[in-house]
Image (cartoon, rainbow, N blue to C red; front, side, top):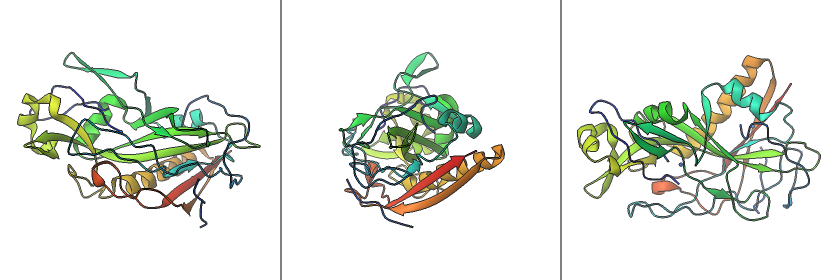
Length: 275
């Protein structure tokens, strides 16, 4: 979910911080320095991961009547067979920065949180908050990207897998666009700069493809983000001389649309990165 962001906006620029057991089919980062051990409390395991208790996040509420409570898809997995650490993957990605619910930035003296918390159940032990979140460009630069609908971000949960020291990492990826609530509707902030500058409390982030969509580049905010994040990992691995592979699986979800009714499909990208 994305929280209200109270920030001042210049007439020509917007800078706000955000907050945003099924059987797998057939057909690849997370907390730097974290480790996992033991066996996941779920069935249908492979060497890559075990099926989570739920392929979607728990329902997240919003402060907007225009956006009812929603779930988001777990749409990328970093395989438990990966031997490259998550800290190394993040470093190789370069512009993907760690953010958390405790992360704040100051925009013209207004202190705001960078991202909100969501919950998922990837172990069968119940819904828990994300272990870590990454944002392309971090808080400040990420908000600049959101003005053009290019702000990709991910929330990440760890799943212990037998035989793997670090386990698998389940990821919910989505693109976001900076929106405002004006006249009872969600509209792009980029098209309402002057008005938004006078009403910073109305600023909000919509998943691209939804009511506040600004660009046709990412018409499917969830599916496009998953594809592009997986591709970013593969490109980063190639640049480091690592071996990386990707496959897709088709899963059964309980939901088919997320925030603002933006649809998502049943595809999950499974990426393995090894030296």
